[in-house]
Image 1 (cartoon, one colour):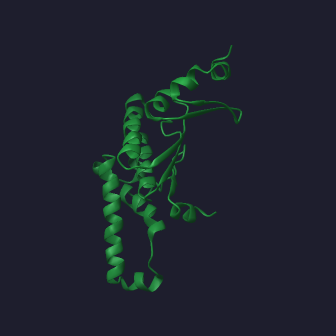
Image 2: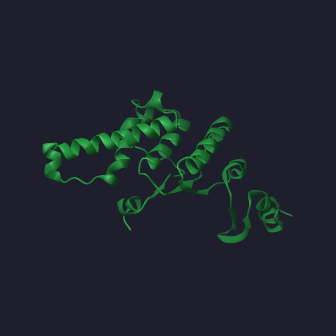
Image 3: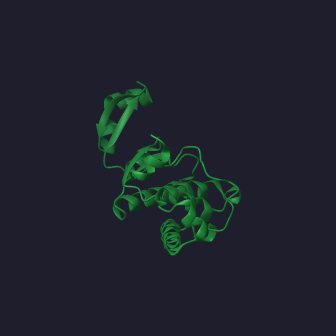
Length: 183
């Protein structure tokens, strides 16, 4: 299924390796995420009809909500190429939120982040789940983040499920200990 159809179904994702437009601003990157909600045609866009203007305002409002939610206000007009890595990771999360997902897939959201940035990421993931009501499915190796935000964990070893349960149950599971710590 093409990505725009997946987005239209209410599924968004972030990437382990950041996939942003580096020579566009943070604001422009987030506005691009709203394309899945575009309902106007070529001629109405060309003429910038009132319906197009209303839709543009709705898109900008959604983007501003994501900027406020993730405390990105000071970076909104900055080029991505000039932003620190941690802010880029949060920008990618904001871009995913701008698609109005029901399901958010996060691929190693703490990859490359320092301890403080990882704590912030945990806070935002909890808020995304608890305040926005978005289901979050995450692939992550940082067990402090997994433990902080997860209700249910599935551990894999070479693609094979070896344990499922709460973070504490999975971490204590003998197969998980053997697979990840040796023994």
